[in-house]
Image (cartoon, rainbow, N blue to C red; front, side):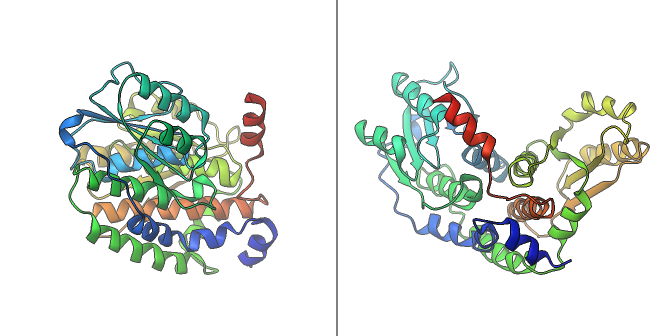
Length: 344
């Protein structure tokens, strides 16, 4: 199979090159200009990151990435309004790549009413205008990407904001390792024979059921499911251990492969709790009774933060290849655009 023929035929906006150069988004975020935020850690006791799609995923990923360092509760808000506890002691980070996401704009206005401390992150749009009108610190993202292909920008901008607010120590050493890793893996994933392409080929004709672990890899699992939806134009399902063991596991009792052609994808990490590892092993036995194949994805890097970013980059490439192999443009999101048009 000549994968480059599929890419040339279906990848109309050259997302292949965007993926290859994703490490440059990290460099942009590191070297970007950040405003003076004008308040310190004592100004708030909780953080709400409000966004949808790629902006919200960045918040999910941040919670996994910084799971051992965050000293304040962080909530990812995916709605038109803020939770009832949001108040003047809440830091609200309103994140929208386009600056025009209506849910984020609405939650921004809700934050103003509740007197939250607010920071905005965007390429511009209405969010920038609102921020200027109310003297809200605004961080400008690089333009020119589809939001889901701008994870490097949105995530590492959040990291820099958290550094500048003194929530975390400098992540410079780890981030430099991630830049090098993504740069190296981009070269590998661009070859005719690589693990991302191989996994995509294995998933053709199947509905992926993705299982991760809460607080460790659940952001990667949800990212993978969402990227398969958008890039591959395919249904996919995601659940987390151990919660999956208290409900979804029963669905495997009556699973019939001829009715729902499924392959399971495990997202694994060496630092999972011993009982979580054991749960994955036991559930494997149940799943295989239904003649369902399990594909395990695991990074072998020597640092958890690097491993989780290794996995996130891998699943992005898998979803891209799965899209073009299925004969779809990995850029097209017609139903999302039609929905937005109907809503307005």
